[in-house]
Length: 79
Image 1 (tube, rainbow, N blue to C red):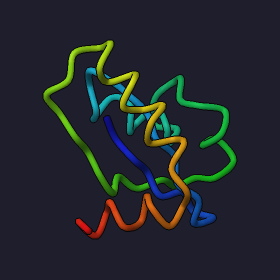
Image 2: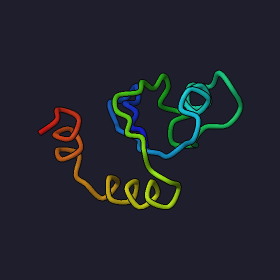
Image 3: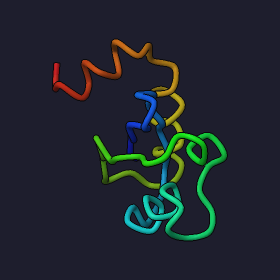
Image 4: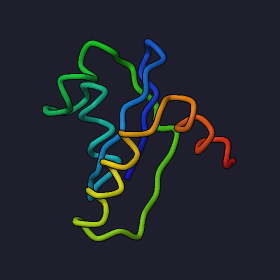
């Protein structure tokens, strides 16, 4: 699980097994990356969570994506 802050201030949430590779893809340093982040580069890692298997990580991702921006920012602050 990870969350990125894009250059336009928007937030992007995703799941990966290799965070460094995925961050390089999002920033255009490697092939790949999400279409959403391609036009919002550079992106910066602002939050990560580990310890999930693939299934629980995807469920957590859906739950995070349903949160409002304010609730996501509160999560980042640890509230």
